[in-house]
Length: 177
Image (cartoon, rainbow, N blue to C red; front, side):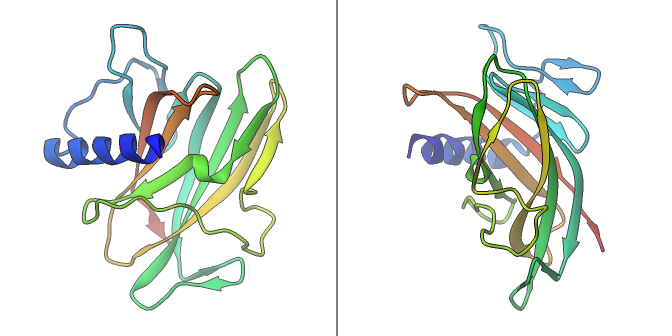
């Protein structure tokens, strides 16, 4: 619940500022985890390495389609297929979850989780283990309004003690298939 509240607060801030503020700590295309004096909110785009406490993630590809994995989008909707590569940079194996990532866009204040139970091996499992130093590349699939041109993929660090850390927001501008 804390994750949802923090994300909604951030979305409200993003929508009121027009996403114009750039508080990234950038090194090339690496958007790195904060130092103590930064606010913990990082923006990136497709191809940027988003480096958090546990792993790096990179949005490698973003496409819109009408159907995927046996699922067809409802009328007025499309499927947004986001290919995400995750690299474990932590000192041990990590439990990973597809619902660590949520999606939103300008015309809504809601957060949307990826579709589950799709019939395609490229779709990120609901839960999996990522071994130390290893990487995995999967698709996250979201049902989105057909008219929306841009989306925000959000990851919020969550710790075992129920505290939250930095938030990473990747702007997605898909190419239609």
